[in-house]
Length: 227
Image (cartoon, rainbow, N blue to C red; front, top):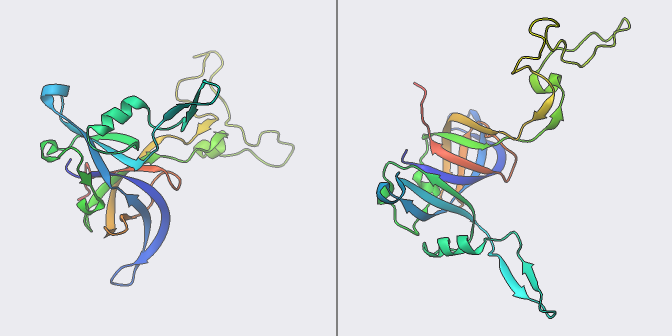
């Protein structure tokens, strides 16, 4: 892997190609990502590049008039992470991720990775956390058929039989039943980069990308491309 970046999902829209066809696209605000650490085989056992994305305030502790400690920015960057980022000469970051680049030794500490590393026509993989749907029944969660609505039926939106009575006398693992739906890590492969706007840090990708708006999206060059 030689190309990867962290992005924020803006939303979906549509653009028109040169031949007049309409192309549905997902707009992503990608980067810039700051290189916060370079891991080597000698020190860490593997080669990778750690990057930070999105600004975040530091956690600050001060004493009030009563002498008690009062914490402001409670959800800010803690002191150990502040020291870690200070080595790279950067401020607090909301997200820290690692990429196993093939050319990890070519990156410099504190350098930026911008959206311009991608070009129109590149094939990428997008990874994000899917939308959470909460607790859902088997019909919505797995697309099962419902029961009859008339003739006195009392079976409407249940998943049906859960297993045999005597053998095996238990519900087998993997049975499609009601439960929590969504909030899973989803990767959509082989998406095409339609447009790159380096000035506005925007990346337009053909098709849909998992997750709600403003969610974190990891963009990597495609692992397996379609022929």
